[in-house]
Image 1: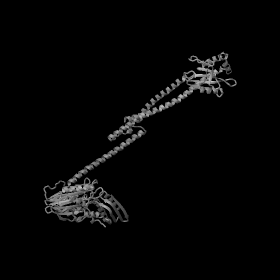
Image 2: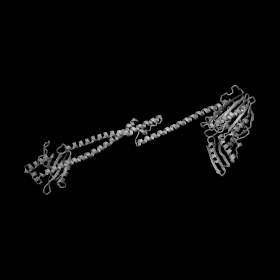
Image 3: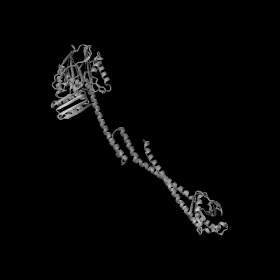
Image 4: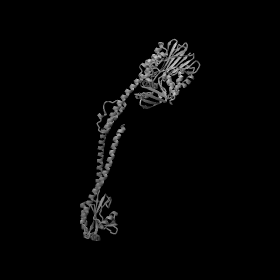
Amino acid sequence: MLNITKKAEGAKLEIGLEGRLDTLTAPELEKSLMENLNGVQELAIDCSKLEYISSAGLRVLLATQKVMNKQGKMELSHVSSEIMEIFEVTGFSDILTIL
Amino acid sequence: MKKLRSSIVLKSISGIILMLIVFSLIVCVIGYREFTEELLDQYADGAFIAAETSAMYVDPESLDLVEAEGEKAEVYRTTWQELDRVCNLTGATFIYVIRPDLSDYGHITFLYSTILDGTPYEHYEFGYVRETTNQDYRDKYRALYEGRSDRELVIRDKGYIETDHHITAMIPLRDSAGQTQGILCVQRQMEGLSAARRGYVNKVIVTMIMLAIIVCYGQSVYLRRMLLDPVRVITREASRFARENVHTGKKLRDSISNEDEIGLLADSIDNMEAKIQTYVEDLTRATAEKERISTEMSMAARIQAHMLPDVFPAFPDRKEFDIYAVMDPAREVGGDFYDFFLIDEDHLCLAIADVSGKGVPAALFMMVAKNFLEEDMRQGCSPSEAMERLNALICSNNPDQMFITVWLGILEISTGRLTAANAGHEYPILKQGSGPYEEIRDKHCMALGAMEGIRFKDYELTLTPGSRLFVYTDGVPEATDGQEKMFGVPRLLETLNQAQEETPQRTLGHVRQAVDTFVGEAEQFDDLTMLCLELH
């Protein structure tokens, strides 16, 4: 289960993730992000309530990061130590901006 | 089924018969009463005419004299003869003249009485006194005497002549002063009435029975034609369809022309059959399609499984090491793979990898990755070089942002020197010599396909004899139980340390069992892949 909250403010988009970002829920996030990324220059993703991220979830973050590299910046905040561990093991901590 | 059909006709016909019985009963009763009344009226009219006629021959003024002198009086004899004549002419059974005692009308005295010839009875002699028959007579005598009535009629089952129903018509004989001097009575038998009534009832019953037969026959023919036959056709077609599930192309509507509820039913059945037919065809197609996909998927699964070295023991003539590996996809095919092969006599290549996502897309990606890595490693590349080349290849055309985490190593069998690189994969677990299993926090690089132009780095470590190396994909620590709790690396280490001295095959079996016990009834969520190497 994954709850996605969205808050758009001009060119800034804030996304809140709550629950598990895995094979089942990743397509949902991908669809939701791709629909809303047009014209967004600043994307902030709040991971404070994110419990788990699988490789499918990482793929969505990677794809989003690549889109945002072209039109602005993307930042992840409140990343828990468990999720950070996953980012580090997979090397994603090197390409994601984690506050 | 047969019982039900006949029961419709039976019910309908017994309803009709019941109605006819009730109807004929009503007709009988009404007719019987009307008939009786009419006949009585006629008898009464006849009786009164006879009475009026007889009265013309009786002089009321002479009655005192007659009562006093009786048969000796001249007037008695002439009058009696006239009355006797009238009696035989009019068919009245009994004509008599009486005087009641006026105190309480309890007795009557017969002055005259004549009987129709040919009847087996005798008339009363002059002066015969008897008790008044009943209160009815008493009341009527009194009414006639007191001038309250000019004619009275008594209807009785039995009388002096106790044969049949009879009526008695009574008229007063009044003198010139209007005083009643006596009562003249005419009694008539009604022998014809009962016979006529019986005849009437019989006719009604016979007519009704005939009517019932005709209506029942007509009704059953009508029901059969309009209801039973069409219903039977519909029933037969419905059970045929239920059995064969095939529309014959012939519509029920062609054989049933009813423009009523039966017609509607036929239309509905026609419609339903057409729809079910379409539905069954769609379902058959979909099932066939699913069957085909399922067959292809299981073939694909077999092909994928055989792409990986899956014959164990893999190197039966090499005593320096033992190796075992398993891959268990969450779906038919998976995105995980392991690989091992000898590059030359002294160099064993080991690999384990996990493609992002699952199922067919991951499997296609995984096949390409596996072949490329193997090819490059056989050509003498170092793990990091092979990774760089694969990364470049993936990044050159990767619209779906697929990536793959890989741990790749080369073991120099004679020295135990392991050269490895880790592209975003789980930390390997190593049991050095007689020590416990521990995670190696090796140098991590980015997963392959994530970013273009990244540099990958090799690292080295030396395995002492008796060491065991365990590599796995995230399906193992991230196996989840019913409460969304994950198996986790600490539990994995604990499990491994319970089986420190086991062969690689038994070690993997032990881990698998621990994971299965932990997950319980929950669905296997991710591909589950493990590889274990033991250096002797």
